[in-house]
Image (cartoon, rainbow over the protein chains, first blue to last red):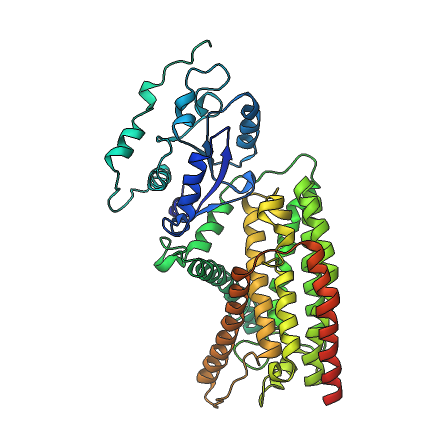
Length: 167
Length: 322
């Protein structure tokens, strides 16, 4: 891969956002990452309307029977190279719905996931940090995480996720 | 056609120069919009993010190109270069470094009108060829909008031609030595800017590419290299229409100070042109950021009942004054 390709992929990240049965909490935080205070556009991040234009699939919510097929189709519609980011505790492993009979237990049971961003919901800084990590960019500056948020983030990590009950 | 002319067409002030301007326009557009919304805008790619459109372009060219199963393969694959050709050919007729364009003939304004119509036609063909639901809806809207903005656009372009008694852009630019035509035909300039917004699918006339309604308009099914060229073409059209507005109404490369030193004169001409080009560009950036989208029937009503009579009024005033 040439240096130009590497550079352009690092600097231009077009994101398609899928809400797979989320409570809208994470979606609001993703929206906040695009607003003047955080402004993801300065890093080259753009929210696009069509999966055909996207490089990164941003998935929130605990994927259930209704959204499972939609999520798969959206993933298959994206052109290569594509990356998937799971945002929020529900997307990681079920979150507060963990163990329920009617929800899935994590996006990675449906489509391959490249990066998990924990939190319920994760802060906009965390989402930006995650996206930068994803493209191999070492984020500069200090990442401010308060104690409360750190605790929240610890609610579900990958190690803690157990196999879903009844499957 | 000698070697120098080929270099002029391909490098400066022809294709390469205008493609560079297209990237700069995209960056300025995003930066202006961001500043007006209280954001920073592109920042990381290059100094002040000026390489952001370049990064977007090269990233798209390296991506996989998906061809939908039911699409018209021929148009889907060969349409984007043709779409790119329309504004690329049109820019050759704009005078930049002197009062004469690279290629010029007495009737090139008619060719410009053909280029503008061909651009919309190619967009419609690309949208239909991709055979997507959203593309089809978008093309329906695009064609309805086209029937609205084409008539006022043509009338407002013809007005400076009547004032200059010439159908070539060169002649129109040359006729604005004393005064700019925007002072004699201000309504035409306004109508031209509004029609240009509709041609470029910018707010408040971004109805055919409404992001919140029909995904990405007629571009929905395109990916990879085709999308890269479509985006570049849209930015090139942006530059082309701004350059046309600057040349027809603001005097283009014609300016107050003229010398006889060859290189200095070229620099002066091109700086006059660039200042006017960016002035028209900023006008369009500001309008498209400040206004919200209107509905398709509102747009048609605006064009047919307000802008067409206004441009006809301006045309009759100009003919009476002549």
